Length: 220
Image 1 (tube, helix red, strand yellow):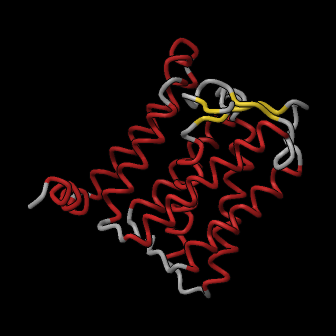
Image 2: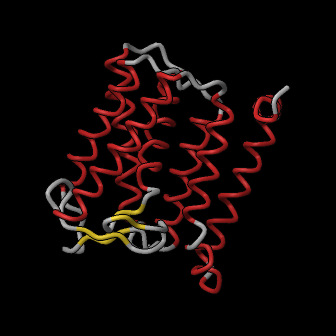
Image 3: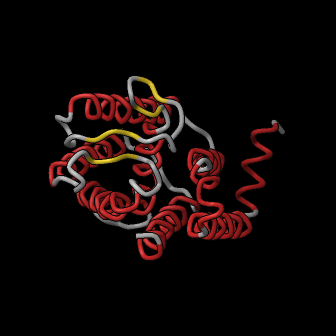
C-alpha cells in the first residue's frame, strides 16, 4: 500500500480521534489568543492552522479525480485573483489592506487567501452534501453559510492582524461581493458534480465558526 493511501486509511479509521485533536487544537488556539502574553505567538500560527485543516481535509477526501483537482485549482486561483484586484483597487469589496498574520504576500495579497476561499467553499459544500436538497438550493444554502461565517470573521479579523478596512467599518459591498463569489464557487462545485462528502468537512466548519465566535466574545 502506498504511503498516501496508508494515511488516508488511518484518517478514515480514526475520524473520532482526528476530531478530538482539532477540538483540542482550536481550544488551545482560543486560549493562546485570549491570553495577552501568548497573543503575538498564536497570531503567527494562523497560516499553519489553515494549512493543517486543508491537509486533513485533503487526506480525508480520498482519491482526487482530474476534474476535482481542476475545479479546486480554479477556485483557489479565482479566490486569490479576486482578492488581489480587491485589495489593490477597492472596487470589489471596498477599501481594505492585509495585515501580516496571513503570511507571504504577492501584490499585497497573501498567497494563502486563495486556500481560505477553497477551504470555506469545500466545508460548506460538505455540509450541504449531507442533505437531500435540490442542487440549486444547496448552492444558495452553502453560500449563506459562508456569508454568516464572514459576518463573524470580519469582526475579529482586524484584531488578529488579518486585514483592515480603511473606513473602520465593514462595508455592505463586502458582504454582497462575498455572497456573489460564494454563489459562483458553489455553482462550480455542483455544475461539475464535485463530491465533497467528507466527515471532517462539516466538523471543521463548525469548529472554525465557534472559534471566531468565542474570540468575538472575549476579545472584542
